[in-house]
Length: 239
Image 1 (cartoon, rainbow, N blue to C red):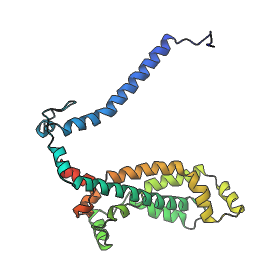
Image 2: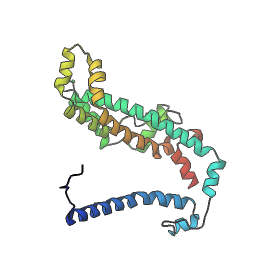
Image 3: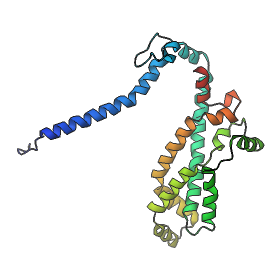
Image 4: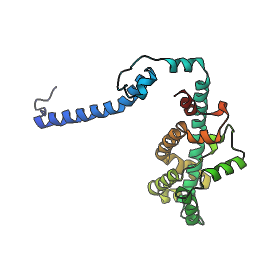
C-alpha cells in the first residue's frame, strides 16, 4: 500500500536537484570533452589541428594515422611492452613499498629514524640526470627487458602513505595478540597486516600503474632498443 502521507517535494528541493543535475552534467561534459577532442583530432587534417580549428567535430577527414597503425606492428609491440612493464612493475612496486612501509612502521625497529631520513633525502635532493644514468649504465640496466621495471622500484611518497596507513589503521595490540597466539613475524605480516592493508595497496597500485603506463622519459633515456620501447615512445613518433 502506498503511504497517504508521502513527503512532497518543495520548490526548494526541486531547485536543489536541478542545481545538482546541472553540476553533474557540467562535470560530465568537462570529463568527456578531452576524449571527444582526441577522437576528432585523430581523423582531422593535421594542419587544422595545429592551427586550432578542431574544437569538437573533425575538420578535413584524414585517416593517415590509422593507416600507419594498421600497416605497422610497432604500435602493437608498444602495447605489449607497456602492458608487461605496467603489470610486473606494479607488482614489484607494491612488494618493495609494502615491505619498507611495514619495517618503518615498527617502533621497535633499530635505527628507524636514521633509515627514514636516509630514504627521504632523495625526495628533495636527487643525484641528477647524468650521475643517475652513469650508475644505471654501470649496473648494466640500459637496454634490458627489465630496465623500466626495476627503475623506480619504490616511491618514498607512496611509502610514507603506506606507513602512515599501517600505523594509524592497524593497532599494534592486534599484532601483539597474534604474536601471543603463536604467530611469528612472517605470519603477522601475511595474515594480519597484509589483508588489512588492501585499501591502501589498491590506491598505490593505481598510482604505480598509471605511472608505468604513462612513463615516457625513462624509456627515452635508458632504452634505445626499439623492440623494448613502450607505447608512449611510438605515439611520439606517430604524432
